[in-house]
Length: 198
Length: 198
DNA sequence: ACTGAAACGGAACGCTGCTCCATTTAGTAT
DNA sequence: ATACTAAATGGAGCAGCGTTCCGTTTCAGT
Image (cartoon, rainbow over the protein chains, first blue to last red):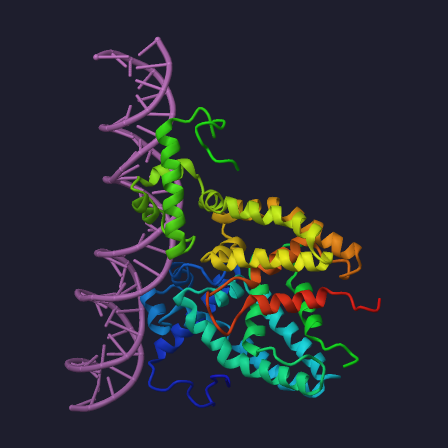
């Protein structure tokens, strides 16, 4: 997580310096290409942008999911870490859940095709799916449990199902004024809310 | 809609008989392949299954969407026609809406990858998306309007957004016991419902 | 039967994912 | 400083798929 500055511990020892450098170069290039062409961009294009061969990319990131994961690692982390913070600071657990979902949705919709990739049943993204789940599912579960505990929402909803549903709602063409996933997610949360008078 | 029997009007005059036959052959083959390999199955495979050349398929169905549309035409029609019928027969417009959505969801989840294709932003499925919308959006709008009119649900939800949301929720790996789109859709409908005391 | 046009099949092209290996280069021991 | 070794590299090569193009076959009307 820490910066790989000269004073800090070596980020991954036993790697040659040029390999380290190339790794960063590829990450930067991939990030740029992802913005313009989505996370489905041809490896060739990313390699060209980075000025390296394709094999270099495959060596550093064996699957496409590894590359995507690495590019968005910081943002996934930020989202994961926001969970407990929101829970501590919000007016109610339900509010915390809502705000966290907002963060999550913003993350998904601002990255071209990321939601699509996440829900794709293609093997090439299996690891991406797994990483998101590993990192964010516990956070979501904690928020959900707290909201149930507080009586804000009805019990019985599985975190996995909720996360996939939210991810699914974010899939598809971007910037369609007729479709804003946030509105539907708000509806979903509404349905989750327990009637005020129990 | 009617069968193309000998007594009925010619289904599409000015087509050669072998072309007519091949069209049917391709449709049958495509239906079979779609079941096993999803609507993304290679054209080559469908051609092989049908025992025809690829060009024959492209000539009859210029885009993949045309083929998919043709294969599922009957079921799309059935879904469209069920709308008014349900509205007339159900206990309330909201019930009709719920039942119609059930039909729609069943349709989507039983066809491998159909929901994925529908929401894909790839051009190759644009026509499929358009056809679904042309045929089903008015039906959904009618049900939605009736439910709003009856005071069952809050106003303000756009039919397009609802349909895309439902479609989106059906996207992804099939038969995952941890994820049943129907549960989330039920939640969505719950959120749509107006509180009983206005 | 004859013939023009419709329909056909599959080769061919372009694009992509992924792998393999000859070559280059960084780091180290002398 | 030089030589050596293993890590790292780059791009050619193979396979799969979508789509088009064209020489050949088959239908249908005379």
